[in-house]
Image 1 (cartoon, rainbow, N blue to C red):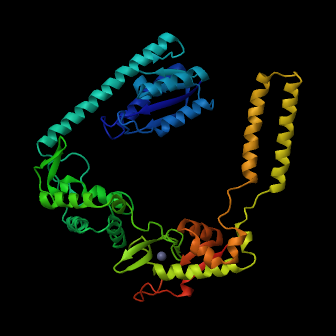
Image 2 (image 1 turned 120 degrees about the horizontal axis):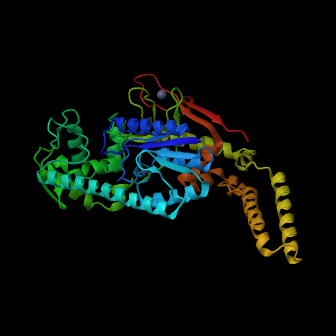
Image 3 (image 1 turned 90 degrees about the horizontal axis):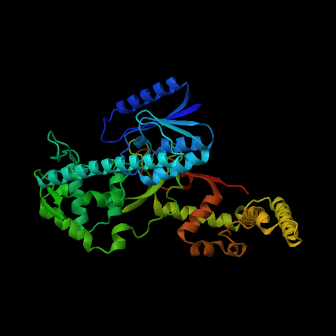
Length: 455
Ligand SMILES: [Zn+2]
């Protein structure tokens, strides 16, 4: 018998994985006693049963059972395998379908193949679920109590850090100034996207992730800890720790944000630049994105300290546009936009499928086979037909032959999304070279490294 051992540890247990190791040890002992060979151990670590997050290794285990690689599932206890009645029902269905054997260290053989076994499984599941919910309830109550005492619960925002006392964060001397500046700019009405772009351009990293985003800025600004406040029963109360700004300052920032029109708050006027992400540093390969630096808008690689390549956005857009328009004037341009498909081969297959469908329909008509017998075959053929037809008519191209009569006018009429699509088709590589230190983000055509795609 080929065994897959499944172990899982939840967040409220030790975080060092010891629990998982003990579970695995016990499961292996059980397999030894039965003379089974363990061919895989599937471990999901530190995943809360309550959160409902995905369990990647559990999915792998199910796949292995489906694929016939495993005959037996061994777990430490039934509640390790399932977190919800829904998962349990799916599991029962799987076991019935595949005939897979389930055995647990704690509850022995687990016969979900009989109605009694299923009933036991469902009851055990319900008990585990209610325990998990009770734990959640206990944690929530503890949080409420802590907040009522003026303590902070949840992630500590950027600009603050944990002090010696849990629940009482303090200002982070290195980052506090950045946060007070962000709050000030938001109060004055600066776009959150602009604030995020400036931080990125200055090489300031957020706590998590690579770069600041407007939602990240919004989340930061919305943290009452910054104003020395905690939220209790939907209202803000004075916390037992100091914020980075006065409570009144924090509140007026919130009001300033709320007054703004929604679109402006969440989206910049022009989200998409022509070359953002398409243009790369010629030396390092880092993609460049549009960023505001002072009065200029630049394409920059966002890798501070390592790659300082940058170029004025307007000049780069102009240069690339004129090159593209010239390229589109050449007679072979349209060939670049023609999707390369094996038209002949597809056509032959299409005819074959149509012929077979015709045949089956005739057989039904003649009473040789029943409609019921013919149905799965006809469905399979219809499926193939649909797939072949989409191959024959690929999504229509953005560029039509007629639009190439006046490429400049066509370019002017395209949206940024369409223009970027055209750039992807025209160029294999769009890169920009560094300039000598101190000479700034100058533009000269020789700075570009352009590989044109060939039809
Ligand atoms: Zn570079």
